[in-house]
Length: 190
Ligand code: AMP
Image (tube, rainbow, N blue to C red; front, top):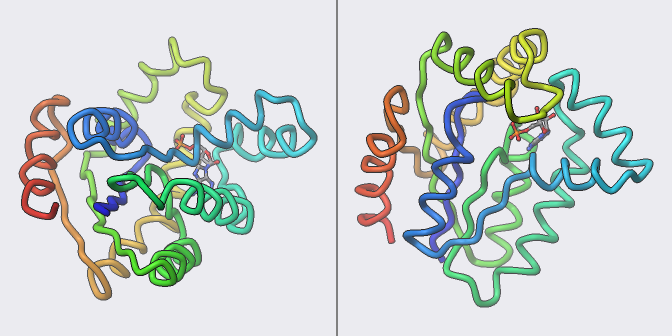
């Protein structure tokens, strides 16, 4: 299996690149943000709790997202070509949990870091907010999400650099330019 972790700040294009990779390589796409938003849309009590956390731009607890990830891996790992993890792991605890889950199943994952300048991601997210209907695409939540990213998510890169396979691409330009770098990497890794 070719398992890919896409990481980068909010607005770096993880979701967009996941869709393009999924089409070309036939991998399964797991966006923890999408799974959590589906739970919110279901109107459950858990969904209400998630909404309160996510609309503030804060992270959902590690326990909840680790459960989501493990059940996804179990449901897909038998006969799929690989998984794109989009927006997970976002903390060191999640990185260690993913590592453990993959190792138990004799699998591994490569991390691809999409690097984009901060002023560019703020412009993209504000623009997306005009049509996305997402409660967290407003300036206050965006700034909160960026600070959460720097404090809690960026440190996972060092973890993958030391322990695993870390690759970085320049995501400042258009979708095709970013994808061509990812495509080159994946054709070498698969
Ligand atoms: P995203 O769709 O990836 O931008 O995620 C939107 C929001 O969902 C984040 O700001 C978090 O509140 C929550 N979320 C998504 N993935 C995770 C994760 N791996 N850990 C904790 N919270 C998450």
